[in-house]
Every structure is written in structure tokens, then in C-alpha cells.
Image (cartoon, rainbow, N blue to C red; front, side, top):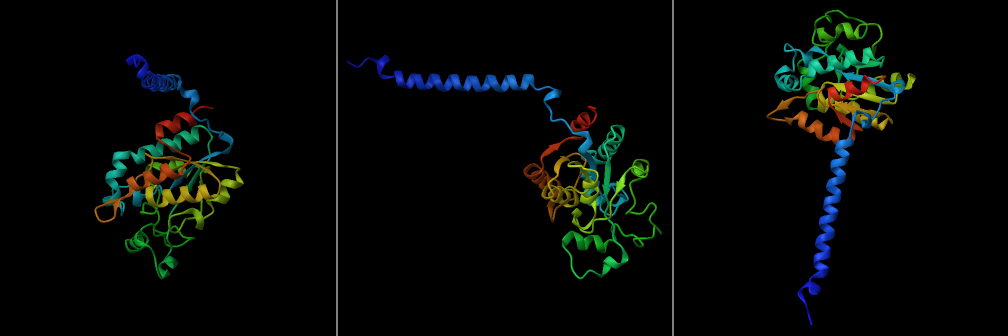
Length: 258
């Protein structure tokens, strides 16, 4: 004799088990959120951490800069200028070494026989041009110069300014050497521009064995109808590659925990 409560018992058990499992998972997630405090955030080893800023220069960050028409909207939306300044100040206040990896072109670089899309554009508009590696003629206030806001923070005698990178990444400069000579293995990365020099620095530093924390609102990128949204592209790659992707507020909170 088949009775309904016996016939459907296995199905009822399965439903009950699934429901109990779902409730348990939901409860666990809720508890995890409730217990998530400042102390659960990853801590920084201050003896082995540095701030690296790429291209904090007028051509990218000043309304008078050569690329402002392409990057200005994103710089403004992200408050990139303000966030880079806040990172500089937080690093200095907490004795975290600061490195700047600049972009310069010298007259001899005009002899290059080929280049990529944006690389060719930079040469054409004289972006980051300097009179020569041993000359500062015409440098003050030029597009290659630091944003005026940052000068007291960079020209303080403590910031390490590397050799210039020549395309996008630090393979052509001494950034990795300078970091390793100070036994730095964790890099807080910010600067310009997101999908070009900043992303290229992230990739190479990862390949070199550094831990890289990208500050996503302390950078920005060109947004072009023809080429696409450089910032959106960078965010995807930051997420896939970097050890962490954080906001300025989040990382400053951690930088201030000495």
C-alpha cells in the first residue's frame, strides 16, 4: 500500500536538506560580514613596502597638459590629482619610501624608426620632451615637469626619482633595482596613465616577484571614441593580475596603522 507521506519522503528530505544548507550558508555569510573589522584587513609590512607613482607630470594631470582632452574627464571623476597627493602625504607621514618613475624623451629619442600607436602620438605632440638627459633647459613648468602641487612632496630630498621609462613599463629604467636595494617587495602603485604606464609597471613588477597593490582611483586613462575606454580596460586587467585593487581611502587607512 502506497501512502503519500512515504512515497514523497525522499523528495521532502532533499528539499529540507537544500533549505537547511542555504540557510546555513546565508548565516555564515552574514556572520562573516558582521565580524569583518579593520583588523581583518591585510596589514602592510612597513619595512618592505613602498609607494610607486608613475608619471605625475603636467602633460597628464594639468588642464594645460597635452593629453587633457583625452584624460581630463576621467582624472576629474576619479579625483586622481587629489588622491595622488593624499598618497604622497600618507607615505611621507608614515615613513614609507616613495618612488617616482617619470616619462621623458630626449632629442636623440626622435631618431627611433618605429613605434606603437600612442607612442607615435607622444612623439608627434612632443609629450614629455626634455632638452637632454643632462639639461633642465626649458623644463620648469613644461609638460614634462611635475604637477606644481606635487613639487614640495617630490623635491624633498627623500623621494627616489628613477631613470625615465621610455615606452610604458619599467624595463628600461632602474625602478626594480632601486626597490630591491631597499629590500622592498610590496608596491603600492598609482599614477598615470591607467592602461598604459601604470598597467605596464604593474605587469613588470608582478613578473619581477613584487606584490603589487593598485590604487584604482589614484590613476586615470584616456577615453577615446576611436580607441575605447582605457580606464575600463585597465580596471579589468588590474583585477585579473594585481595582488589587490583598492581605493585611496582604503590603502591610506592601512598605511596609517603603525
